[in-house]
Amino acid sequence: DAKTTQPPSMDCAEGRAANLPCNHSTISGNEYVYWYRQIHSQGPQYIIHGLKNNETNEMASLIITEDRKSSTLILPHATLRDTAVYYCIVRTRSNDYKLSFGAGTTVTVRA
Amino acid sequence: NAGVTQTPKFRVLKTGQSMTLLCAQDMNHEYMYWYRQDPGMGLRLIHYSVGEGTTAKGEVPDGYNVSRLKKQNFLLGLESAAPSQTSVYFCASSRRASEETQYFGPGTRLLVL
Image (tube, rainbow over all chains, first blue to last red):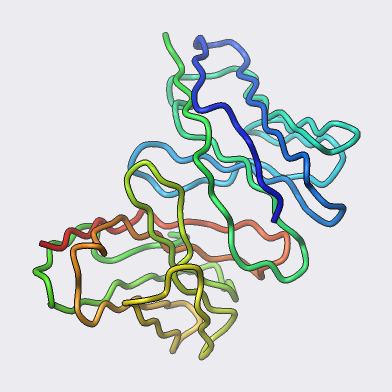
């Protein structure tokens, strides 16, 4: 799986959009970009994933650059409950069984 | 629909004791996984199963055994617990491996003294 690079931490004001960057410059054509988050002491929670098109769901939007070497997770209106560690993961779609969690980005939403 | 549940939530063991962690899912998923998470680190895969009656080793399988006798249950066993196995254990399941979302349980906190 391609390695990812994320900033270790970032702050965000409540009610504002939170933009979380992820670099995956060695991503290959059959690898998806996944985002999970882990709120303190809980199990990881799936947020969104995509291959090359931008994606949006009820939780977030995922913007993937045209060369697919980086992506941005957007939380449109951050709340205090969005405070968590956010993991950007790339994985193949061919029989890959595991998620490789790195250090992630610790996002703190402040009132 | 409870999703993925784990039993127990918390356990303290003495070195050398054995125990079994139970994971159950009600989503009819084929694949199930056991991960461990140590402080300040990401999750590491211990064992996984691609279907009832099958298991396979992950990244850190030593000291653990698993069984998948029923599709909905995945058991993780520690035959002789060691302090290095103090960790938080997460179970997950997915419909299948490729490009499928993994759904996680709430975790089991294990302390080995």
